[in-house]
Length: 418
Image (tube, rainbow, N blue to C red; front, side, top):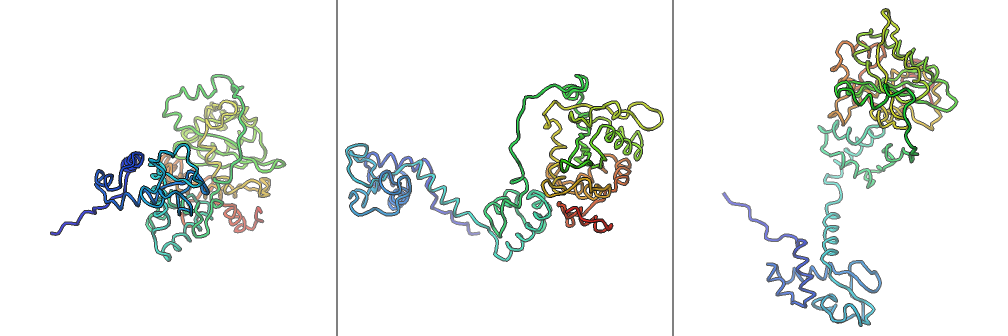
């Protein structure tokens, strides 16, 4: 069996370039340096000539493209640079000077190598097909990580590769297609203050609970539309499975929140409600201020159905799962698009949840929250999704935009939101 012949040539490394710089400073000939490095004389000479940089004259700091007329004769033949010249630092009147620096030469060589590898290692037809699928999925609100996983059987591309293709503008893509790249405003920071609900319901008390209980908690918040809207959306995020429930509230008040929880409890039963929503973490909004009505069961037998804890004031990251899921919710109900939450109906919330919860999540190894919910809670989870009208939408039909809500409204004869 014939063995593959090893390549005799390899690129110069940082140590070899440093040795060349030291040799130039000592006026050593190219042949002597080449012999010490185990290289050819032409390799050393070409390295110096190719990666020398301008230290005085036009283009200072850049690579020397050509030596101008009237330059020092030292630059036209070996050593091609001012290294080793007695007048290098002082007393030189030449208008053009250049030198060889191992550090700068390494940067230039690395830049050439990176540029040589830039581009797409696919045929033009193959890449056009891949880019069309990526553009279509981006238009439906899916992230590069979700695209890379869901399309893995069709093409192999890491999420970072897709991000690079988008950033470089390949096939007409741009960062404007990535909502999280352009959708944030600078956040104002304020000094935190203690929760007004007492230390027994504070985030510190919540943090003192066993880890298993905290991981099974539900994070609760509200999402509002326009400032003049009366209706708002109550969101319930189940930590253990990342599921996001959305309930329409007629007003932003504690009585409306309690009534929404009553509807959930009546739909699934007190035992199932305590299993899924027995521990609730929320913020200090006025709509959550009446913890007694939130905890009180609406079913016979009275007693408490859950226990409510509150984040520290202005510390929304303490319920970060819910806040992160609001990013996905805002894809379907975006801000500053003229959408009035007063036009929303309960069926719209079912359409929203049916798009959010079948969405594959990178944090869950691309498992959809809906499947995780059913796996975690079994019949109780099935009863909850049936009561809320949540359906599993296949990946190919996911549409993470307001168009999904409008399509559901048109199917039942209602006007589109925008």
